[in-house]
Image (cartoon, rainbow, N blue to C red; front, side, top):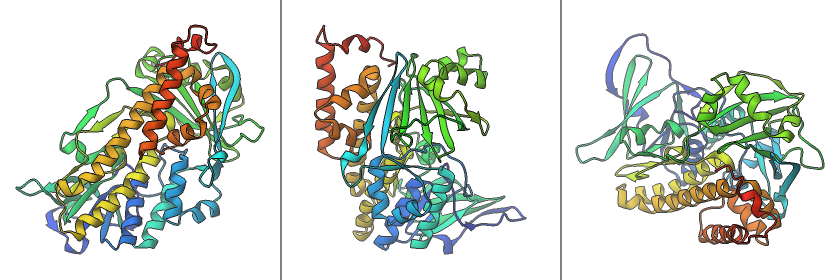
Length: 442
């Protein structure tokens, strides 16, 4: 749905029809949504021999935000044999991240190459990347429909999901399955249908972004790093992501209140925020915008449940946290992997009840809590976050954490140690970094 796309186009019928069964489209598993979550899940299910159908309302290629992948996604791409595609298509390889603050023109660079085999990730044009993932899923055996809008998930009298009702033009179809997976991203079709969404009132950010040429990407081997520029306003920061050697994605994130204060003039708001960070302003001095600005509410939320009888949620359909660490695609891919494992087991045992799927929920909810804590810690110590990581004895562990390795006990240990390092700074009156904690943007 929200992350849509596919290749088997369903022609719009010329006449209106009442809902009717479509047995040839029924499947063991119906996946709603054709973004990275749904497509990676499809690829894993292909390999497990599980019959499935991916349904999406959109047509690829289509633009989407989320162009910088975390290092943890590289392992998933290797597992599904997609790295040769990434290399063939010459996506920009990301070897690190640079942090800048508004009160210092120097950058803090964190290099991923010390992490070993998966010490790199990619910057991607999401329209192209998602389209290639879709082709890959089909080549592996996924059945994919596009141009089909899933309106609702269907349930029986016992409260178990039995399939979906979908619209094709003016016609409706009822599709049956043993399991329904919501991979609709922030559209969160099933979570909204069941009223499971719990917004996080602390994080109500707003993003404005576009594509530019002429952006200064820097030198000294860091031209292809992600750049994060902190701004001296509440929860304010900007991203600078090289999509190619000529084109960069640049976006600013702040509390919604700052956008309103700028008078709702998007261009004026964007320029105002860019100029709050001297280094960012310098890098954007020769920038030329290539397309209209996109506006994006980046509100955080988590669903009350990730699984139920005959259904489960993956990716942003389960939870969404502040995008400061570009966690979206990583969560999408890892939740798809974990979902594929529990789905194969549940179908083999002929038990798709909520208890049979509960192991998946426990694992993903623990990861969601880690991400939430990492984000909160960042905003509490934002001006010195990058510097403390760079100087930390546990630098590599923290880099792994921030790049998406949040699924085991090591993540909790790393987060605890990192929090301790910041506590020491806070509780040491003469610590040289302590004064900057008062400038935290959280």
